Image 1 (cartoon, rainbow, N blue to C red):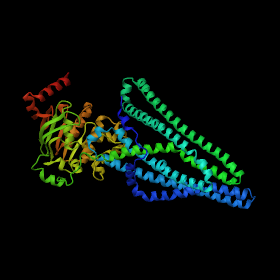
Image 2: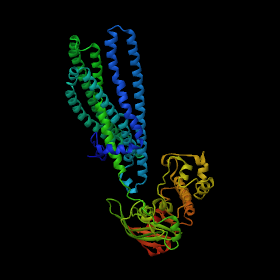
Image 3: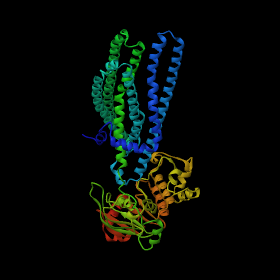
Image 4: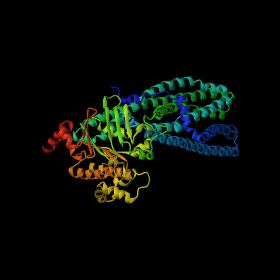
Length: 600
């Protein structure tokens, strides 16, 4: 069976001019570093290539002639070239790493900012693990392009060009002997490159499958332990881990074979040089120092070719990662602010007296690839009115709350806030006007204080924090913590109970203080004591503002100004609790079913 991650790991070309052009555009702000790198390449190559020539001079003009003073001068010059070479290499490595890190920083900043502008439907389509791979792993692979890929290849090209020129200038006949083995080397490298490409793709596929399985297993570890599935999960992990190991072994075999083949051909070239060059030395056509220099230059000729496989892999991974990163950056947000927003808080404040706080006009909505969730849904919430929304599970109650903040775009009809279509609002202003407390309160890792102050536009005073906690019925449990507001909150607030997380979410909403508020199942899955606290906190939160309260527990919304009943995507009933019970309709049946369960 083809898995989603299989398509995600298909490899492309090792060089793509279009992608390299876009990478250069990202690199352009750091072009000074690139120019410094380009200046260091020939200097590094010169410092490396002058060494065999100095050995030739030392042998021919000083060792064989017994000139120890001259030999000392050449040895000192050789030492200076070594120091210069290592300094140049260190400088080149620093500059290329600095360039890669800066480009990587810029790309990650751009990706994160771009992701923050995406709509909710985008995150429904794209798993979090895949997006994290884009921001972390794929950007890291692009960094490798600068440190081990294109930079190394440019350096190799400069070095190889210098070696070829020097060999031909020293003795063109002997140079042709060395070059005679190049076609065999190219064929062998091409064969192993293709085989290594296939094995590399297999490694990426196996790694993607292992990562996906590991992420899912760790997130669902409680369920695995609950059903005693540890042996089965361990066996599944062992299978995937073994597949990755086997793929890595195959990749290692091809890489080792390429190294061995290049080493063998290089050794054969040295043997040919010794045979042919030795004859030239005996015939007086070549000096002994020249032969030694030839052997040194030949080793420098074959070394970059030996590393070709690794560089090809880096280039290929960088091109694939670039395609993914730029593909993500090229995905436009489906929901954006209009070029000239017609709604701002000041204008809405003047219009609320004449318009409902929230109004749905003949709204229809369906999630991508799904059936209609809402069908010609219409209702209005007046300023300061508390409206409850009830209905069976899956009828679109939470969808209505999300449409109020324009997390999704309506297919038909209009959603208006303050008499203005939400599509005409500037998004930040809209979401400052309409708040949402979701069913599952999300807390960030950090402290309680940090989770509360993120709701404020600026600094939140200690008095505001204390007042919000008190009104949200959260002050008692926060002050009971050893560090109070500075108490540690772990990932997703797992060290707090569901009720405590919900109370903190209500306190955060009080600090945020929107004009309109939607509460989605605020009292679900909590014990009676926590429910009582949440209900008291909700009364403080909803006072003086228009609100939509979504609830399954009908006992929590009996005092609402109005109750709306949603059934099969349409508003079927509207009225107060007693009137709806007397009507004997959908609400009455829901109440009877729930009352029966509660008293059973």
